[in-house]
Amino acid sequence: MNVSTESIDLYEVLGVAKSATKTEIKKAYHKAALSSHPDKVPEHERAEAEITFKAVSQAYEILYDEDTRERYDIHGMAAFESGSSGMGGGMGDEVDLDDLFAQMFMGGMGGMGGMPGMDGMPRPGGPRGSRRKQRGKDVVQEYPVTLEDLYKGKTVKLSSVRNKICAGCEGTGGKDKAKPKRCTTCDGTGQVQGIRQVGRGLMTASLLPCDSCSSTGSTFRDKDRCRKCKGRRVLEEKKVVEVYIPRGSSQGDHIVLEGEADEQPGFETGNIVFVIQEKQHDVFERLGADLKATVKVSLAEALTGLKRTVVKHLDGRAIAVEVPRGKVLRPGQVLRVKGEGMPMKKSELRGDLYLEIEIEFPEDGWMADVDAIRNILPAGNVPKVEGEPVDEVVFEEAGIEEFGNNSDGDEDEDDGNDAWEDVHADGGAQCAQQ
Image 1 (spheres, rainbow, N blue to C red):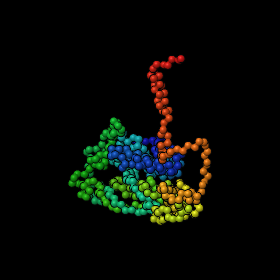
Image 2 (cartoon, rainbow, N blue to C red; image 1 turned 90 degrees about the vertical axis):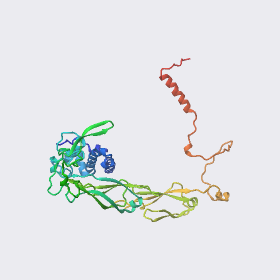
Image 3 (cartoon, rainbow, N blue to C red; image 1 turned 60 degrees about the vertical axis):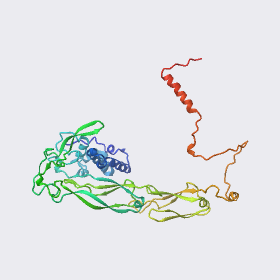
Image 4 (cartoon, one colour; image 1 turned 180 degrees about the vertical axis):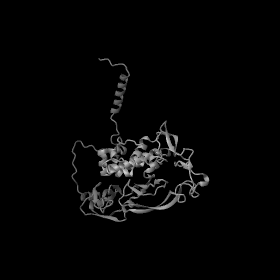
């Protein structure tokens, strides 16, 4: 059964405007993929999340590529349907869009013989038997990385545990030449009718994976089961995988280990996807390929010049700065060092390093000869304020956040007005004109 895809709006699937840039499309995909990935939701929501995740991934594949996006903008989803004329058929060979969107909008409806269930498993006798293997689920995992490792790049080794197709039975679950029998629980369909919650207090009838046969529609008698996997079709495999973090990587970047997810008979193995989470750094703040750090200088350095190392870079180098004598540093002033920021991926270019000046003023009473220092320092262009009489006041130190705390009584007057209005709104007595 085919489902028309003419009404599908891929821009709405990703939640972006039709004028969105490639960067906006990529950001929207990352956000949607993380929120809808089956491994990131409660177990009872995984079937629905898997369908949404596939739709989001397909929308991204079409819209991110300029050629396929242009085809979609002109012809819609018809450009990728099987057998469409003049469209090249490239995307149609990779993804079965009819089945994908049928699951997305019609999964859970009864009477759809041959359609895959909400778990995405192919059903015996259905039209998918003649098509390419479905792709297994990707495993998405957040991976925290230090700014030092993002600056230099790094290869790390991680322990991985996954399901691997049993070599003893090649994933059938039975002994050699043993014949399976139809599962009596699901009557060979691989699905059972169940109740699924779709919202608070809302339930719907839905087709669910059959646990008795692991959605295959068939089982083996105990004596015919594979001795190695006990009929489970897969075995647990422990291995070490290498994860390479390219220098210049940033928050949200994906590192994909192709074909390293759980194996499942009849399915193409999915990927392990690491999503980089950039750790906060004690010294540096990153924005794109630029870095920023705060440099503390003494009052003497600010007034007479600076020549020393000011910060330790992410690769261990000490960065030295020289400000000549006579050049005054001011609070909040920023010095830019070109080419000392983060490396840019697939390039030899680097961003810039911004050094923000913070002046440490001395403690009260540090000076022995106040008059001598006053005579040395320039008077500056301080405006002279005149007025009579001169009123010498007593002051105390305060924070600027206290500014405006004192009320002048307007609020009380407003409260009175509001009360007067409330009386009249309730039909109270009117004031007689004098």
